[in-house]
Picture 1 (spheres, rainbow, N blue to C red):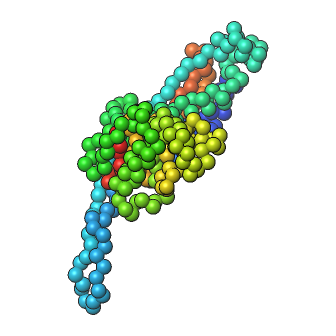
Picture 2 (cartoon, rainbow, N blue to C red):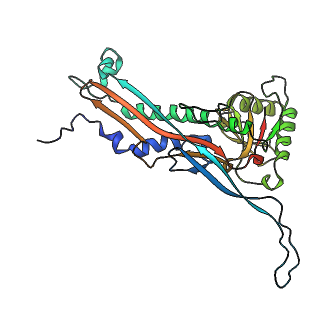
Picture 3 (spheres, rainbow, N blue to C red):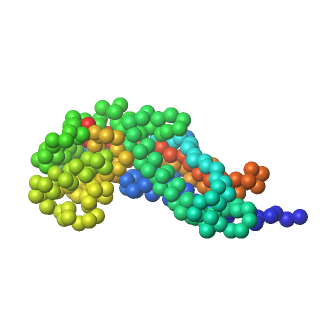
Length: 305
């Protein structure tokens, strides 16, 4: 006797890790995050912090007076286990225009499987971006969002601004974002990965008002900026404005590397499959993974809402 593998849709299984990695590691807004793999439930983050600026003193022989303080800090990051599962019947396509791509007889697959999986990856990426910047405290089906964690952190710099207002001019946006920029620790103001995470609608509104005001510090006429859906540099700063799945009326300024994305990808639990179930005569898709979010330093975050 031998195994019969003729009905197995193998290409997804062969690329299991590739499909899974693409789904959870490639949402655009998360690509600059500090990556923490191998987390199965909860991990303690340990890092160094400087309580005061170094107090340089004159050299002296022997044991000099201690100067400066370095603290050890830790916090927890928790991941939740998520999945997407879908059952498909290829025979349902026979009564549609897709029948042209179907093989004679009973079909156990369909001609656009790769496009189907790409679509699933894209929807998962969008969902993960939304989870990352959520104000939800999380649960069994959703990780705690960064804004939820920041809301309980007294170190986070809070500002009040009604981003949803329709009467703001370019001057209003400039004043608020420069204010956020100046609220950061001075040492961070020149960091290269400084990101202003904003809802897509806010990005579009800011671009429109800046164009109307004639502030062409960057080429906003470039087609790629139309719609405000791609990152752009805010004039007069090193801040990258990053449109993402941020809740309405919430804007966050922080280095991308201050934010943490935790996941597993090192166990049999994490997997992506597309296969034909001979018993139920269904084509099935399942992807399961672990994901969680946090950040290192609260005072590296300015949250305007």
